[in-house]
Image 1 (tube, rainbow, N blue to C red):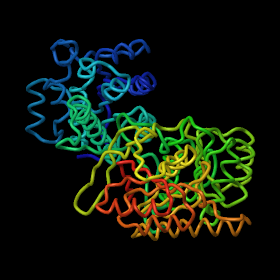
Image 2: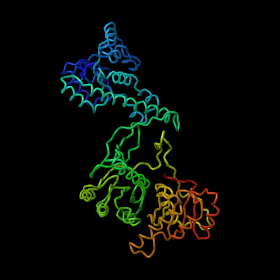
Image 3: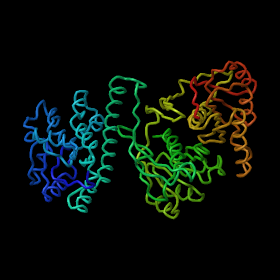
Image 4: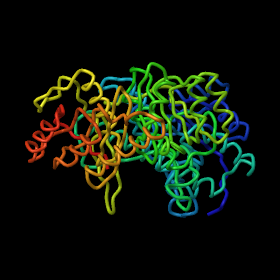
Length: 530
């Protein structure tokens, strides 16, 4: 086996014709015989190149609407033969099988066909059979055959041919083979998921294929000694933070993406609503507000906990304007995420060269479906996205006093934020802004007290008469198992409570709320976030 293999004969059969004519010309200029199929052969001929039809090689016509054209011994024998094996060489001679040195194949557009909402029969017809077979044959026999499956790699192939006078090296063929097997694996995983989930409605398929395409390597993982990378899904997916355009700033780390996604997902809850600002630190919201302007919302969000906001992540639900950008630049901020930013905003951010500005173009549907996957030792935990939602009509008043309309609005706002706070989560809100947030504690009482403490610190710092928790609504992501957490909220000045309910001590908690003069509503739905 030689390290380099001269390319004398190439088989080209592509769905995506990008770069095909240029590659075909480079091959033809080097005297490579071009063998092709259907539309690919036509495209090459239209470019003025001489092409041999696959039927001339197989002595068999294409048939069954093109379903059967390359599935033939004269194709796969030419791909799989071990060239320096005497038995293989004799079989090739006896059956007039010519060697194929290069295969350029990309597969039927199954993903695009599904994405455009095609009917079932059209989707089935766009399941490639011959293509993956040729790809796998060529990749397996990479000791002798070069396989290229992506137009992105045409330039690399042409550079390789130039450097080796029309040959390819083993290192290049191994690289292309690895990419080829990844391509067919991803392709088959898309098909298997479509059959199981979309076609048959299986919630959790017997075999779950999880795949992704490397988007970029990251600065580091959760800690500098950990390596990290960002992958994007292969197959239909909702565009989001992973597809955002980075306008400026240094390279992102794993933590930057994780925290920015937490902020982005919460900002999406306010899609189409009043100007909204979310500030996140270590994947937990530390300030959220809505206002008549983004600047007003920013000021109210920052006032919730300006200490934690230092070095945080900011996400907004609409185009960033200059005044808001200027205000954000007054504190150290790691990442800002927005659907867009106007020229004034970009100019202010440009003065902070390390600040990352990510523009997403749009906000995702917060109620979209999908699966969340989390690795554990020896396996994967898989669950549906927490896309449950409640509205005014879903709330059950359980106290003697019903909440006012203003209290109800604050209850739902606090509830929206609480679903994005690590459990045990307690969120105080007043007038469309968070007043205090308690996150990630081992008991709900301590979360209540921490949130109230944050509110008291803000009142002292800004010279307010009393903390914003006075007259606020408080949300708990899960039920109060005891009355102590609720009483801690009452001590902080909360006047209304929203919680799932469902504890065996609900009567005790309701009695405590009545005694404190609180209004309380049950949602019947909890939102743990671990």
